[in-house]
Amino acid sequence: MQFDEVIVELLDSACPSIKYRLRSELLGQSSASPVMLKLQEQIQHDPMVQEVLHWQGLDGWLAWDFHGAKSHETGIRILCEKGLSHQHPVLARALDALEGYTNRLDRGIGKPGWLLDQLGFGGALMIRAAMFASAGIEDKYFVQEQVQKALTGFRAVLEVNSIKDIVEEYKSRLVFKPGVRWPGIYHLRLLAFTHQWKTAENLFMLVNSIRRLVELSPIPEIQVRSKSQWIAPASFCMHDFNPNMDSMDGAHWMMWFHRTECLARLGVIQSIPGLKRQVDWLDTLSKAEPGWSTRILSHPYFSRWGAYTGLMLEPDWRHPKSREYDLTFRRLLISHYGS
Figure 1 (tube, rainbow, N blue to C red):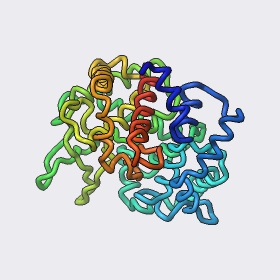
Figure 2: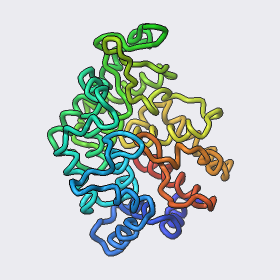
Figure 3: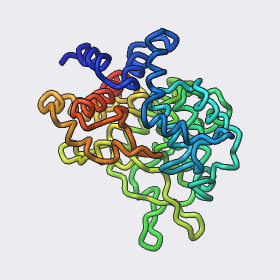
């Protein structure tokens, strides 16, 4: 089908979340229009949205943990991905609680969340900033502060010619050398969903940084060492910017879609041949093998929502068309933001 025909089918048959986000993000329709208000009402009745809405306590906090499978972070991520307006009372109160209860940012992540922030790898404070960014809010001082740290993380990549430059072995594990800075998934998410940082100079730096990550891929698992403690930085999706598309399994496809959507939102894909090649490869595959999407979506990384995983917007995947709609929507996002 042609691009316009695909959008028409999704607007006619997909779930309210996909319909709303297509109209908002691709077609630029006002959230105040009658059709958009009706879709917001329908989104609120989505089973997963209903579940998250019931996580909220009297103080506005969702669940108990800050970070984890069932957590404040995951709840906000689900509501934002589902397309719920950040003005909805539950989401608005959750964001207020996130701003106010900074003493809760260790829940589910513990001391490592603060250590990762201090050492420049993105911890609790960067996670919080990325959560606000995903809701379309970037004018908070603490969000802008973390945006600068995210830029610093990507800028550090430019100084690396080989992974050996930044790692050392400690008790049979690879750890970052002291003083090294390195970007993680929250660096990428934060920059993907904010805009004020986008100067010509920063965009030029980011293109070169990500081009270097493509060249350095695959990147091994590297931990942060703090005294005798090992800490795993948030490196999900950040190990291979140049995968072998022919051999990816479902888990790698989920990570590819998540990472590539963020890269598309940054506006760097067309400037990096290695990334453009991947997107073109997907377009070719989709045309040649229409049923491929159903196979890869069988992996739980797509349907199991958490701090890192989850891309499923359709409430029920028992019908193959629903699976196709979800993946087609992600392809359209990548095409829209990456062109």
